[in-house]
Image (cartoon, rainbow, N blue to C red):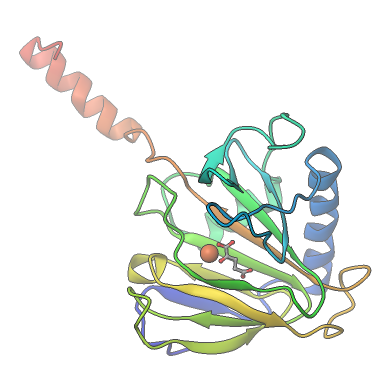
Length: 225
Ligand SMILES: O=C(O)CCC(=O)C(=O)O
Ligand SMILES: [Fe+2]
């Protein structure tokens, strides 16, 4: 699909119904350990209109003091559960990046007021890693813009099983969810949309090849610097 921004890949129906149901049941496993939370926005303290939780070594959190990554759930204080294997496999298949994601943010959109305002994902220290986005359940109206808030945006629907990859310039583009279309899918019991967003947070350590080259350099030149 043409969106006016490079690095964006839209894969509608990438996951069949069985794969969608499997991911949803893995989300249940995640929320059994790390229950959904309703974060508030830094500064204003206004609550988001969606519920969030995480899997992985680092989870994205928000409270009055700011947006950040945390190794533990804000309410339980416990580490997040690991990112399920099928999601790591999907990342390895689609993302084409040299390191695995460290965060799987789980967003639950339920009801007519659920939305996510136009924003950029900018709390990650690794600006090069792509972002992988999975849609489950009700169809959403996704809005994608450009590098600045003033750039033109366009909206399109993302239905259950859609996978999106944001790399290159699209990785840093403004985006958001205008609304969901309640009742458009039967996947999520009680209705709603579950979004999984896979992100690398920290820059990966040098590849074994790079480390090896450095070791060879040290051996050749006797440097310990
Ligand atoms: O729900 C979506 O598809 C987008 C989620 C998102 O942009 C985010 O969590 O940063
Ligand atoms: Fe985002």
